[in-house]
Each structure stands twice: as structure tokens, then as C-alpha cells.
Amino acid sequence: MSQVKSGFRSAALILIGFVVGGMFFGGVASLLSPNSISRWLGPVFLIVSTPIMIVTMNRWAKVMAGFLGLAVLNGLVSISSGHVLANPTMPIARLDALYLTLFYATATMLATAITQRRLNLVDRISVMAFLYSLAFLITYQARLENAKSALFNTTAIALIGFGLCCLLVALVYNHFQHRRGHGSRSASHVTAL
Image 1: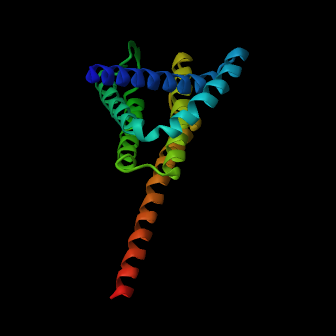
Image 2: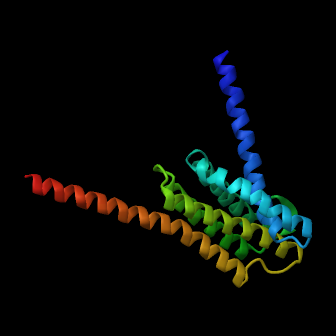
Image 3: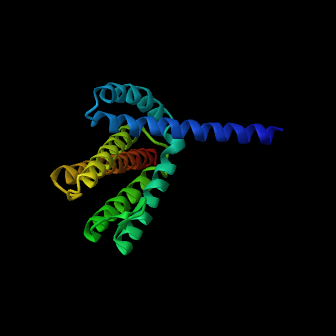
């Protein structure tokens, strides 16, 4: 009976996680909507979802790295087929698919490195900033696709660069914190001798 309860609890947590993630990405997409009701609803979704995501980040951050890895596979399929995986009737330039694949591969490596440890405040802020830039990028590029415009312009490149820099900040901060921790321990070890 305890296994059944545990299974239901896990299923409920996964469902809640998808709802919160959907609220977050939907909230960002609503901010860019021309509809005034959507622009009002977007901030409400973000105000609800962002704190929940920050507090529970240790639980879902590794899943985020997995989804980024799936985006890499999606990009590889798009490079080989010349079409968007989610919509086989929509062509994508192979060079654009390559750029997106490189972005997602880099983000996957950085996110995986960050999620190998317990996340600190800088990690949480950096990951959320990355997710905001990713959500804006996805929404922005979906609009460009619908308008039959090129997927890469200065705005898209700026969002990609900002997102990767956010993840890089978390890694660099952790590196210096780790070095400082080793330096103080070795200094105390030397003085104890």
C-alpha cells in the first residue's frame, strides 16, 4: 500500500511540475502577446511559478538538463532532415538548425555541470535567468517562424548569449568558491602543523 501511495505522490508531483513549468513558459509567452488580457495574465503566471521553481530547483534542475539534451537530439534530426521535428511540414535552414543544436549542446553541458552539486543562491538565480532567456528565445523564434523570417538576428543572438552567460556565471562562481574553500583549508592545515 505504501508503494501505491508513493507512486501516486510521485505522479502528482510530476503533474504539478508540468503545470508550474507550463505556467512559467506560458507566462513568458504571454508577455510578448499583443492581446492585453494575455499581457495581464503573464505576470500573474510568472509571480506564481518563479518562486516555486526557485525553491524546488534541486528537484527539477537535472530534468532541465535532460530536456536540453533532448533539444540537442531534436536539432540533430532537424539538421539531417531540414525540417522542424515538431512540424515536419515546416522547413528549417540546416545552418540555423546547427546553430540551435550548438546552443542547446553548450547549455546542456553547462547545466549538467551545475546540477552535479547542491545548488546555491547564485546557481538558482543564474538558472532562472537562463530559463527566462530560453523562454523568450523560444517564443521569439516561434514568432519569426510564423512570419517566415530568419531565425537568427541580433535579438536571438543576444538572448542565446545572455542565457549561456547566466549558466557560465554559476560555474565560475562555484569554481572560485571551491578554490577559496580549498585555500582556507590548506592554510589552516599548514598553520596547525
